[in-house]
Image 1: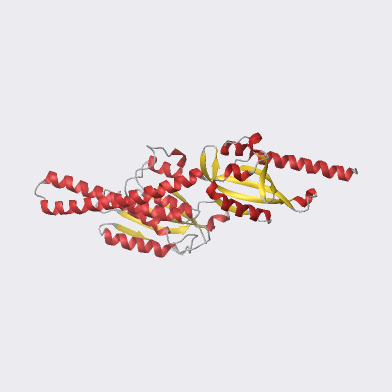
Image 2 (image 1 turned 120 degrees about the vertical axis):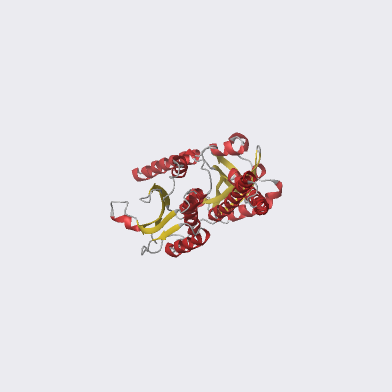
Length: 365
């Protein structure tokens, strides 16, 4: 054998070793198979397959793969995928497969390889790669049930409580001060529940429709619309809007949720009878390099009490989320999740009005 040929062989073996090392240590379950009359027969598996499916290499090697992992009622689906693989097509599909402990859901990829390099004259095998989606899928379904049932029932019950309490307050008409105060407290709590249900609905819309494509929108009309609405709802509040020529940002109409939530919080959590709010849009100048002009900041400022550090920290540093440390409401979460969907961030500062300066930073389109 020539030195060149020997060198090529050593190089191939080294590459193969690295390749085997990778397959052995990836977290996805991988099966290498030979195609025998169009049916995949196991030639090797990695450690992750043993861990996820619960079948040892010695007992499954040389066996038809489908007999071990495909439920009887899914055989037709599996045979169609195998036929695609045999024809040289790479398959991607979410599937249900049988493990030693029951059914689990996977993202399946069937990847054929060309056996002509081995002198076999065509396709003779491939890889089946399984990414376990079981917990993700189950959690999605659980959250969907909780969201639909809980949010629907919460909103309906809050509406009933608020309606009856409003009638009760009208009938009392201040006759019994203590009872009136109790009824007013119940009414406020009911309206807060209604608000939570609405915010949860907005969060669901944000999470269900991630921004996969680049979109742009001018935030100024949204800001002015939100401010106009809140001026009507709270005529005692002073809400200012600064003119802006910052231009469009990378976002869509859901940006309104974030801005609306911040303006609402600035008013609702201010004990002053005449809360003051200022909204301004400007180019980001927080960076020292020339790239800072690629970002736009939307500031919502107030003269109310500072947002507690625990509330701010749980948004900025989400590693601190615990059953007892998660924030007292959904408003800031709605803002954070909305802005996050657009590749931006939320930050907290102190305003020269004396209160909070909550800013949304978004990429200029």
